[in-house]
Image (cartoon, rainbow, N blue to C red):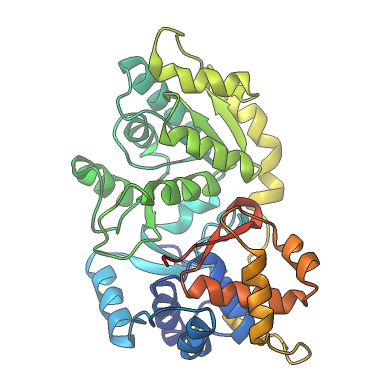
Length: 381
């Protein structure tokens, strides 16, 4: 286990972070806004019912108790895992730089692997033998050159990527809880990863069975941990292409392995190449593009978690009034718009806009989109 020095949350702070992020309607963006507004998770939790009512919630959701958080902590310990909060030394440093990173990760294994520059390798679950061989070979060659390999522990290409890099350092990201690995046939692979210097992470609660909508969230972490993402095989409509899109939006390099035009499993990768992805035939293609990026990203300093800092002073800005909330709701609709547009349209202070959006988010009435855009969730009449 990594013993890196640096600021860490106290046990009580960690429990309250867990309570806050496990509260329904609290996602990474609203979590950050709550910490920024109230200075700590504990203070934010006290304000949640009032904020939900102000946002128009039909009912107040159940906020996990301290006992609930302690029970999940104990479950993690039983599984040899722990919770790492953003800003702590064991948190993947490059992941902190994506939009709305997960504030807390469940982790099993060693965090030392995060000290290596990382490359993601993803692809089809129903991969061809050639694709599997390519993924395993790429992963092994990257590992020998000092890179870690990250993937999503799915069947096919993901599994091959982990198998090829298990001896040199691999990172698996689960869509469900750490105690609910999917697919179940990779349980032995997970044990091999965590006992060989690699790690498994998830932002989902223990006991959480992965659903279809959880896999794009997992893909965002896979892309966010890596400097670049390699797609080995992917059909035209596949989760791997979602990963590639997310990687591109994060400013990561996107690579693709060409395939036969006659194989539908290569249609997605060939399409990526047409759109400007970097062509890959061996690990040198990846290394030559990523090597110049390593020093400026991996060695960046680690900042303290938000709750180590003094709460910001919001006293200079008056809280939003009911008519301010009505103006913002009127300006919103099902089509995503930028927050800057809302500020210009309403003429309200940015702090007031962010507060109203936070209230709507906690009430389950706001949907957040890539690039910071937001839209209104229309309530049933």
